[in-house]
Length: 305
Image (cartoon, rainbow, N blue to C red; front, side, top):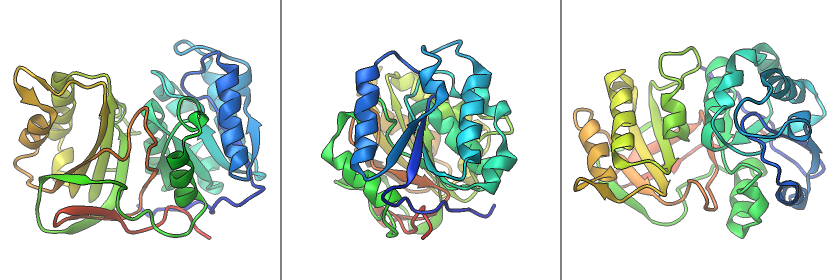
């Protein structure tokens, strides 16, 4: 697969907010997200999927998909940002116009279950997409680090580099290179066995999760292991695990991660730089990454000038 980079965002560019997953009725918070984007020098359009439908489950599939397709098809729009996560982004995967998306590469960023869309779009079109904070309860919080990560990933031609802050080595090995793949753990596992699952071969897998038990994480990792995905990977980076217990039955997330991948023996790093309810480092999906020798570094920008 050849990765296709979207054009870098520039001041005065028009960007759109869409709600392909949830859309709770918190208009003040949504406006805070609009102000965040405007504070980056961007002009903002709020899509019909935000204006016309609220809730988390059972929302109109056609409305959500049509809005996303429309924003990709509008040449004036240079970037698309997901409003919030939830439980239903995958419902619109078969309604997306991947040919249209491929013809109009542009910045597409989201988090949580919206990462199912990011990975499907990358798999189907080669477009480099971005795992970064959703607008609501992410960018809307106006955190200074969020501004820094946003600008560095989407408005700066330099590669993202190393994750900010300290990174722990869960298992080390000789350095190797691969392309990035990233997502919420269960939102990538849900796609297993479909035509929309992430591209795994030769990848470094960045994942995080929220509110799960250690045994849930173990089940997800073994699902990937049994499907052969671990044999395809070059390494793994585990992010912030919001609301996930330290251990269960005396077993930790670190232990189940290393056990599930013990045959592959590729490097595993742990960082607090990306995840739910924090200022989350923006990770482009489909760019060059180096891992091993005690560090991980994204060596290629996700945007083109």
